[in-house]
Amino acid sequence: MGISMENSPREMSLTSLAHRSFEEMSKYRRKEPSDDRYCLEIVRRAVLQGDDEAWTVLYRQFSENLRLWFRRHPWKDMVLQYEQEEHYVDLAFERFWKSVRKQELSFTTLAAAMSYLHMCLNCSVMDMVRDGTRPKEAPLPDYTQANAPEPLVEDLYHENEVWEAMERLLPNDKEKRLAYLHFHCNLKAREIMQFCPGEFGSEHEIYRLKRNVIDRLIRNKDKFLWRLGGSES
Amino acid sequence: MTDCNNSMAPNDEELLSYALDDEPLPREKEGHLAYCFICQQRLDDYKRTHAYLLTRLYRTQCPSATMLNYYCADLLAMDQVPSIESHLHACPLCANEVAMIRQTLANFDPFPPEDEASAMPITARHIIASPVPQRRTSAAARSIIREGEWSQQYRAEALGILLQFSYSSNGDNLLLGVFSNGYVVSETNTCEGIVVDLYRAVDFQLMQGLARPSSPSQQHSTMPLQITQIDDLGNIVFNAIPGGKYTMVVHLPDCDVIIEDLTIS
Ligand SMILES: [Zn+2]
Ligand SMILES: [Zn+2]
Image 1: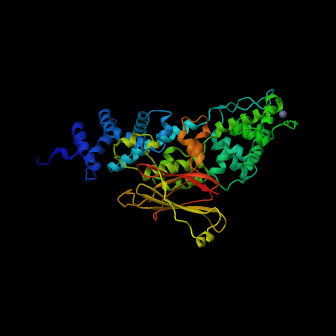
Image 2 (image 1 turned 180 degrees about the vertical axis):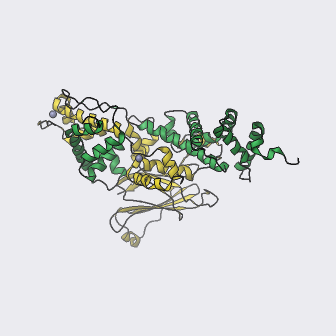
């Protein structure tokens, strides 16, 4: 009878939980000893139980942190050209919700939950940069015009197969490495010299190797495309 | 592939650098290209093949952003680590992402201060390190310094920086940095873990003025040439740096310190 129900976060109303959680987070912010259970209970209800009201509370409690993390993010300026700050905050929440639910993660400390949320923000920023720098779709090369290969690979190719087919056609490690840096990383000759110091002697060597690679691929286009298609035997 | 026999025809290397890397062609060869069908066809083949392979292969081998974040946070299963590490060794793009993740982890503050500064553009929070005037080197000291070697002290608010450029015995060059404490980074009061980038000066300028990348690869020009972290003794080392002008950026938790005009001969 003397035991207050308030001591068990699972039994508390969302309103009291939100109130206690806010108090405890303020302590945590001031680096005073704090009780994480209230906040973690909100996370549990919001994500694992799919409680919409708990999700609203969670969003309110952490969105400011996410905004501040975003403003300090080293790639902030790079991604702001695609979308506004709010977009990345929302994406981070969405990612948090999905991964915690999917993996049924349960956090034992507030710090762990916040680190995970921070990681979700990082992923959202990185994905945007990856999308933004992805080359636009290019049609299949039409080498001979008159008897151009049918675009049979368009729907059949598998990314790994394209890479493996190309690797098989290239005779030595240097050409493979160059093909990787050019076609997989989209680095120009000058950038290859910068980011891979010591791997190639000069930009001239890079262009010479690249010419070999492209000529070889064009020469072997039938084999190459057949391998890509996989079904045209 | 049919080759053009005209003496003004660009050679394959010239054509490739023109077609794929936007490098200029000599004027007379550009003139030839304007009317030569054979060379135009060759250019077109190069462009199409490159574009096709790029769209099929670009970053197809890269681990997801989540995997790289898990890797940096030591959350990956043991058996997944070797493949990530070998990929990082091969892929400069992922290596750059991992450097960024490590930087955000090292600087992570769950409750960052809500100051105006954090909302300002990053350029407004830069401090340019100022060189500390040096005493003249004695003739005896000069005799042991090789041609092109130098050392310079800098100051940026409470942070003291000594940079020394020299050659190792095998002829490779070496840029050593010593960071003296004074800047309170954490309770331990050290600079350990702070990320330091070395940019080509031209790339750094490009990055600063970058409004919107017009081509996919333009982003890569804004990557540092080398990235490192300050160790527990306050030191950093960059080596095998190609000759040229460089800019160093020290990512302190709340601002970036920029050291300009570094000459590597
Ligand atoms: Zn021609
Ligand atoms: Zn990669």
